[in-house]
Amino acid sequence: MSKAVAPVTQGVGAIFMLHRVLPVSDAAFQPNKHLEITPEFLEHTVERIRENGYQIISLGEAIDLLKLGHGIDHGRARYAVLTFDDGFRDNFEIAYPILKRLQAPFTIFLGSGLLDRTTELWWVALEQLVANQSCLDLSGQPQAPSDTIACATLEDKVAAFSTIVQWLTQVVSETEQREIIRALAARYDLDLPALADELMMTWDDARELAQDPLVTLGGHTHSHFAVARLEADAAEADMALGVQRMEKELGRRPKLFAYPYGYPSAVSPRDGEIAAKLGFRACVTTTPGVLRANHASELMQLPRVSLNGEFQDDYMIDQYLSGAPFALYDTAKWAKSGFGIKDGLSRLFPSTK
Image 1 (spheres, rainbow, N blue to C red):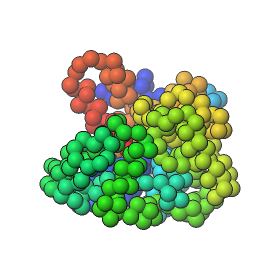
Image 2: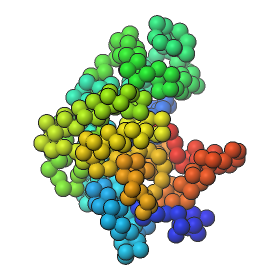
Image 3: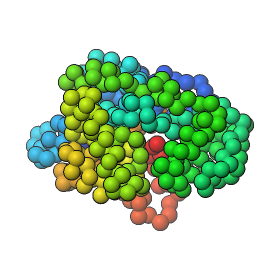
Image 4: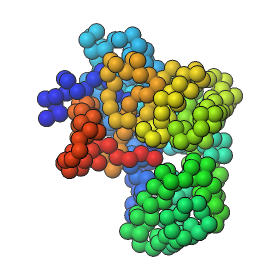
């Protein structure tokens, strides 16, 4: 089916979104597994993209092609872009050598506060808190779902993680979210700066990457807040601080930007206006989709394709490149019913942190 409709649905290219590249873990509780792919699958993804006739190009080149209107109707091959969010250490230590050997350009969007060790990796911290406790005490926290939440069994842990994520991302404010994580970390002796130090790149790592023309370093705010949930002044201040820290550490201002989380409630048109004001050429979201000619006028809200660690296979890569699932996604946005559609989308478009 996807091959039959591909000429209509696949667009001119696709921006792939990744986070971490790690060996397989045998841990039973891995709520953030969808954010991880293996080194072998990263290499296979590059090979599979090229087997499908796509060129892998830099994000900057893709933006240039969109603005110039140079698509397949101008004799261009379709193209794919590889992007990584946050700035995890494994991007430098594992992904970079693979992509360097394969001569595949890529972009890393750096959360400057994560490299400074001042911003909380709250979703990873929460995973560790739930994994290491049989019960979490939430008493005294604003609008907590309960005073305590069970984490004894695997089933308990999965449910607890889901409940707390919903609370932290939809009920309390962004600043309250971090205050809650800091309070829980203090209560259960989890060292948040040490966690960031263990998992995130250093500025020296970033400086080394910045010297390689294969690598583009983009902005990702300073504090990794969902900017649409902040007041305009606060959103601009955090985005600007990320630019300032990168300019100070790397000697250049980033021109490309990824919104943290990137889903509709985390990004608004206002945030695109702020990004343009700060000098960004283009911004990427996590809205599922391939690139089309009309995106030349929507550069502050570009879609991406999420590579999901739960589904590391050729089928997923081919489906994404075909563009067919995104037509399904657009249909499902207005469809009032249809379990089959929703079930398919849960596989193709997993939630992102």
